Length: 220
Image 1 (cartoon, rainbow, N blue to C red):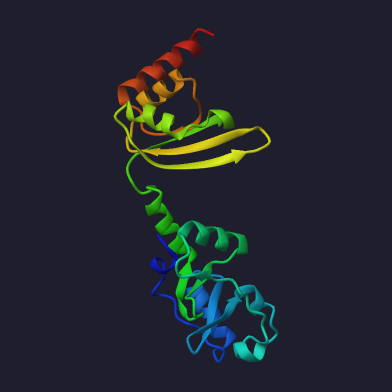
Image 2 (image 1 turned 90 degrees about the vertical axis):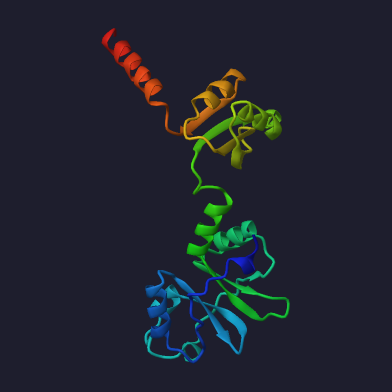
């Protein structure tokens, strides 16, 4: 999935001749803090709510206000992961998309990024989530996948977060089953550490666990 596939059709172009108040109204209506400024099909920059609020007279045009515009953008063929990185690093709520001739193609909003990233990472699919913690030298995704598949399950998505100081990797797995009890037991049998889990346990197993916990509490 690339930038040109993520473009929103709902955001209106703002021109230099538009007033700062008009730009603010559009930001408020679309729950954004930034908007692209376009002139004759060319991207000029991004105007921010913060910059407008610092003006003495917000009724003046963007051109007359002399507001400094952010120059962040992505190319049409930029992958969604890089779109996320660039948008996050620049702390923007929109990111303009341009082609190799610097023509403005449209804008991607933070809402578009969230929605499409959720689809790409299978966040909207039914299933459970496991978070594993392994040493760097022990991380073999094919081995983890083999163990999960041995439980008649499939890894829908996988994210990693490296802790360089501890020489460990946190692995977040989205798996296509709602009840991951068997997967958890199997991974633990292979000595994988599961730091977090989010899934619906079988009702009978869950009841037995609660009963055991109650008995332990009564015996203390």
